[in-house]
Length: 134
Length: 134
DNA sequence: CCGTATCCCCTGCGATACTG
DNA sequence: CAGTATCGCAGGGGATACGG
Image (cartoon, rainbow over all chains, first blue to last red; front, side, top):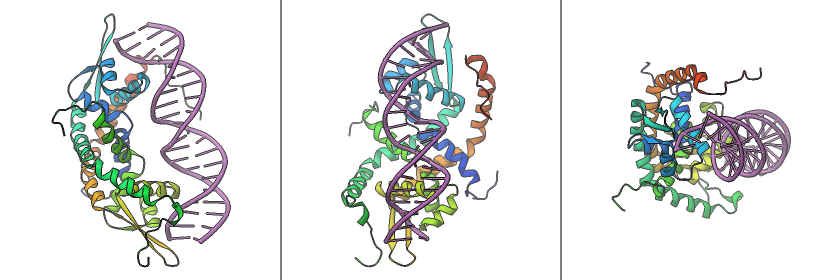
């Protein structure tokens, strides 16, 4: 591993790749819930709320593929499937939770900035904050 | 603020919202570069590499709206526009960088998991991946 | 109960061309 | 130089219906 900070493009791509996994609509919500312990499909579905079974399946498949969760099938009737965070998944949860905490604390600031921006925006074209004059 | 951990849906929505900003294709790359100091439009465009002017504009607008960067126009000819991280932007960079570091360190593990999954996949998935066109 | 398959809309995003 | 406007495609993601 090179100690050089050449985050030009090469290295950042892979990082950006993982960041996008984290950033997609449901991943974080699902992983957060699984942080409390293993959970069944519909249990997860109910707790997350608003997620379709298609997207839950897709999300879980992605997480499984990336090695963040394990999928355990109990060949019973009715069938039962448990999802659980792997070691890697728990490790991921650390920086993700930190970011989540930051987000939670700063939501107000972001919303305020948005309202301010939207309020100054309506003319769209004349929205320039010039450096010197005006 | 309630001390209860009712991260059911209410709170997590806003968090997920910001997480998606962070997770979109270019935001992190742009913000990272701006972490080094203010930068001009094309300068940014060149360094990030592979981003279209449309997406750079869109990304920067979003970041500006959320209060993460400032946009300063110098009414000169040719025009010059500087983008710079705000205090909020710098603060965001902290947890984002932490997550980025984690991603950088664990890219190999994720890739390994992916290859393993893809290798073991055809047995459990009913439908095989058809050879893509080309 | 746990999925997969289909349809379909909507948006992200790239390519290109044009202004101030 | 720093955008905006328009087009077009590919993929995300919801609703629904069906299968093991």
